Length: 142
Image 1 (cartoon, rainbow, N blue to C red):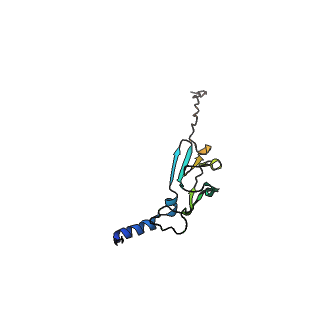
Image 2: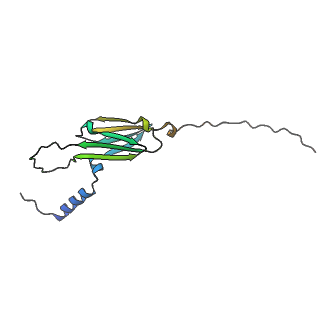
Image 3: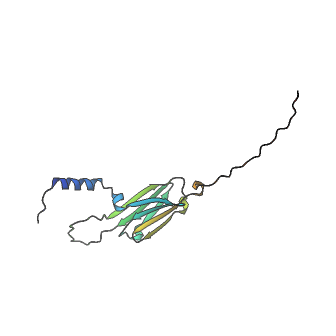
């Protein structure tokens, strides 16, 4: 069956593909804080765990991964929406995190980075000292 020409569908599809950034499409991410940790959850289904690389350079956290095509030669694609290739995301960490204690775990196609809040950035109580009024002694001449 021949495909009919639909200029609106074709233009919409073209813009959708052009505006889609490879990182956000290939590596969708959630970032949130819970208690004393920040959590970064990145969907990486079908990625070989050996290709996942997490680097920290000063305050730049870089996550790289690769998804290899699984179909062999001679395949005629009818629809191909799952991105393949190498992907990367970068996050700039603030000074309020304990970068030396970042933990990374990959389970069921999801990479979870746990980034602890630095001790200096945690809320704390400050004690208020109370000094009693002191009487001023002196003589009054009259």
